[in-house]
Length: 194
Image (cartoon, rainbow, N blue to C red; front, side, top):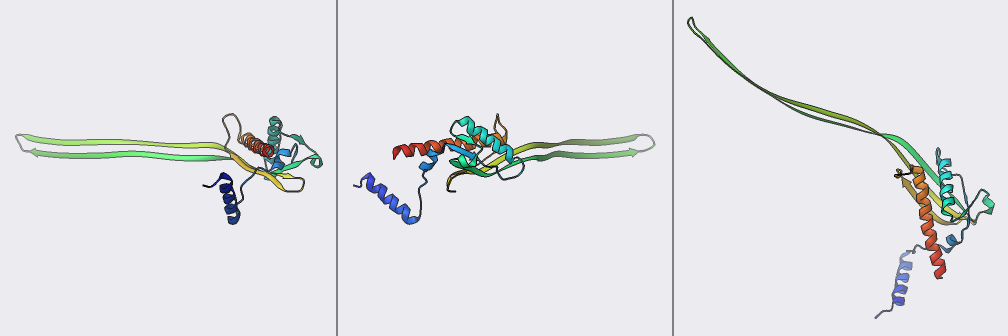
């Protein structure tokens, strides 16, 4: 019967042989206290995304945000994109049925005249079309937290079409911070277990 330690050792050796590295939440992440957020790349809207990320980090109470890069324990850098566009949908339905029949006959002589006629008809037509134009707003950001030596200690990519009470950019900023809080919590638990 194998002990749990032996099984863990076998799995670790197998993973090392295959080149698989278990993802760990680096203890360095648990030690970050002061963060500098660099201007984000990505063009129009990236300054606003940076401001929203800074605001979300401030609300979390997790870090002290500094504008002095030299005083920071780590730097948050990356890029963001903010797209606003119109999406159009056109639909058209049509039903049409048409039928006609007719017959006529006539006989005439000097004393009497006989005439008969039959006719019929049926027609149904319906046409429906619609044009819907929807304004869409999507935002995304890919960020990494880099320590003073230039090593990446955390990264994430988040995207959103917006949320019930937020715009797309605010939702992305909140998702980034929620992910960072979760990973920070795991890093602190791992550090405490060492």
